[in-house]
Image (cartoon, rainbow, N blue to C red):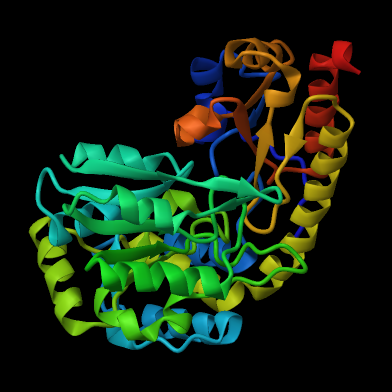
Length: 389
């Protein structure tokens, strides 16, 4: 049964989103509403839990064997959901996509060289780059017509010559943007012109709001396949991030071998639970996802209506993901002031400046929760700024 309104007690389940909210954000663990970590509050698709139960019932938990059936399931998903034909040998599995970024950095650059990101963006990009002794080359995005826009002209003028890799977040987190085919082709051409490896992180590519469509970068720029790596996973789509399993899809044999050498050197092997759960999601998750999208869209509308009713707050139109980018600059408050108001009413969204300095006066709200819980969160948000109404 699929019921996104089901009331689940997610506390005391070793779930980071719920267990660490008090320490990280200073809101009560029992009454606070966590709106930060990018995972959902919902049960995974029945096919996933059935596969896990089958493993438990069998009771033998050895190393994972041949992955042919997983590859078949992944190929079928990409074909029917994205009209994208991938080959069985393209995929290299990793322990999550954060792990994939580290593998790629070590395979395609040297310490001290730079990785390009478009800021603000998923905060782990910069953290992982720095942790691998590389330089973050952040290209600030502009806001035009209420949407983030990449400025490739400014980026080109800022290059120093040591930029070897670009991380592109597509769809964008935290802005919730789906990039147009033209924008993606321009990014591909930029990387071709400047001899840069392009990593398209498409972990949110299934979570697209009604009226919008995601473009797989590899489909619109096949001519740069020799320098392109696409990252995909079932983690965000099906709320199984804890499996820490993702795929690097690399069509070019030479680049794939280059990355595979580093993966082998890091002794990365497939997580049996992760692979079997991911395969089950690909094979049986269609109905669950098709019901999830309108549910998230209703939450998007709920949040937008609440934000529109609070003077000084604005929100980007959410085209993809379940992560809303809310701007508090219109309140005239300092970051510390509006964060304290949120803390006082027990709300814990992600701090915007974690995604880059451009997010200093913004917060990211995770809306992937029960309608009733989000409704309560929005009521608290209105109470926090009632003096502005």
